Length: 248
Image 1 (cartoon, rainbow, N blue to C red):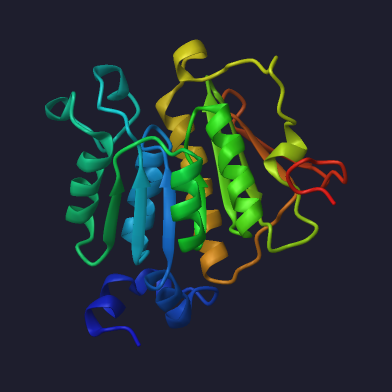
Image 2: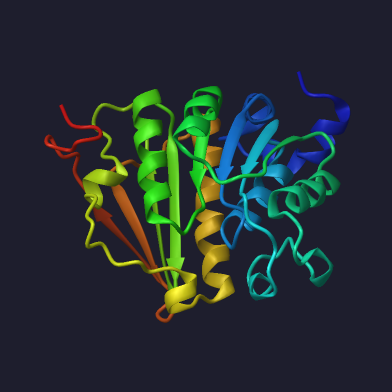
């Protein structure tokens, strides 16, 4: 049962038939891992803390740099050279003191994934590192934990949900098979406009809330956003039988 204060705080969510009090309780009981506290992780964590997710694990071993301030909206000039995860936790706690914030002040590796991923309900990939993305995908598939992927460069964004609980769900590796020749495209190499990250992060937050509250989330759907034309496109993808991560 929600407290009177929770009913007041989350009243605009609770009045939605697809959320209701049961959905809000599900959010309060949920545990979510956000990997990367950069341009995607900042708004994702803000929206999920504000929505009343009970426990947020935020993982990032980086420090705030002046070049981050153009798009990483949790940070200020006073935070430069400080731990991103620690500073983000402080700001998120100010937003919602009822949310438990657990800081992982280091870059995730296989050992940390083995420890943390089986303990959460959803993993949100907010990284800009393709190898980390492959690693998260593998661990989520192996542990049957939903993975909400987001990426953005320039004026373009993409978003995908991998739900290994669904036997028909393709994984990230089905869509982008691992290759040593894969191009390295990230904010440092091609640039990024801040609002593009906010749009993709908003979609990641929405998908996460839907997953946690039992609302339908489309798997096998790659969502692409073009910021210059202001258009979303959806592409159907297929689980690959020969995928080395999720294939039979």
